[in-house]
Amino acid sequence: MANTAHNASAPVAHSTHDANGNNTAPLVIITILFFMWGLLTSLNDVLIPHLKAKYTLSYVQAMLVQFCFFGAYFIVSLPAGGLIRRIGYQRGAVTGLLIAAGGCALFYPAAESGYTLFLFAFFVLAAGITILQVAANPFVTVLGPARTASSRLTLTQAFNSLGTT
Image 1 (tube, rainbow, N blue to C red):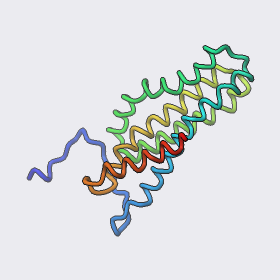
Image 2 (tube, helix red, strand yellow):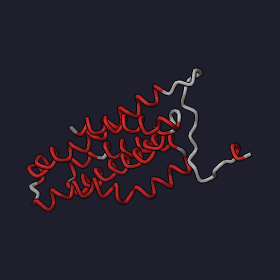
Image 3 (cartoon, rainbow, N blue to C red):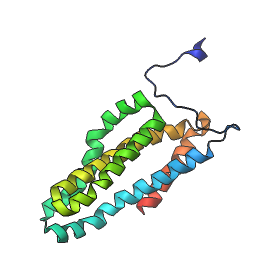
């Protein structure tokens, strides 16, 4: 009877494996996403000097790029957890990708209209990445046996570090 209990507050993890029980494809996709998050995070430092030149920014204004990016993690993390609890890991990851894509789409008008819109677009991009990370970390743990969950998570996080490098 205890094995059939369902925790209503746990996110729904829809089956992602093929007929043979193989979770390799979803794990590869998530690992690629982890690499991309690391890469995006390290590009912040490269972006700042270019923005300073384009918009003639002070040092404080230039550091708003980092503030908007990492501020999104602080502001969006808890609401993202609630979202993931309601819609599940996979739909949460897709939602995060769509929000991040929306932030990227805002860069084009930001290039014409100014720095404030750029900061907003960057915040939206980072909010999407935050939702993706909130969904992906626990999703990796359910993509196989519980006894190897920490190994899968360590592997994907290693690709995050590789992307940052």
